[in-house]
Image: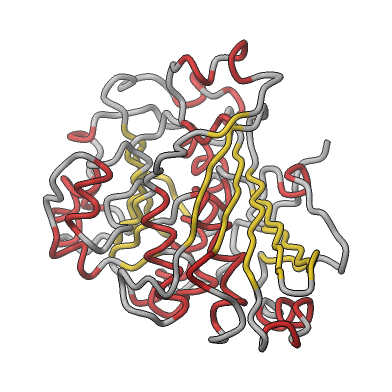
Length: 350
């Protein structure tokens, strides 16, 4: 059994980790930290976990995290890197659901997250945790930076088009994405109040969003072009949906002369044929966010609305495949387990 600790178990990604890991046949949850809620039983805060999680929250000092096999950080940006050195030196594998180990350029991280990076050496060895595109490196990793929720959909949607060079005009990609309010985290903010977000739809971060550099960094890696190269560039615009969970991304790419002769449906089906969590839907489909709710599945539909235009529709649950489910998928790979273990939940409908 893997001994697992969770740092920051009171937020939405933390409770999603608890929901998944409490049903994982090879996991023993040994510690869940929260300075503010220390001493409070987890099931008191989250009744859905009654008779599943019998632990109480503890302070990080009392958690004995160095005795764990794996520690998840479901915390604000900056927390994981402050504790990473001690855990890595103790032989603990780290999976960070925040951004501390996503961006490889330290200056870019500091620009977008407004804080110094305190362990660039560990950042250098950290592996980006998107299994469908980085599986073998994740298996060998000690530290994984879990992808952002939006970047997961954008990368999975564009990857088949980018892996074969010359199919699309990769410098002019567009990602029009929308997420439920839980993507903003479990905190009191005016824009996510029921009266503000319900019965409403709006764009945000239009001048620039911190998922933008993450998306472009990873798309360039998928395409095999240098970091910072203008050969691959994606315009990313996020929107807020009047829902709790789910992401819907609509992606656009202009096809080259060579790309126009390709069967896009076959391209996507072949690319994801052996992926357990990716469902390439039949031609003409329009996937819905409710079809992946509370699951680790991604549904993708590819269209050609014009002869020279590829349009890809991607849906995921932002808290599961977009965060905690993907983190558990990475843990399975890092620890030599079946990648799907504990993650084959059927989506919740309605």
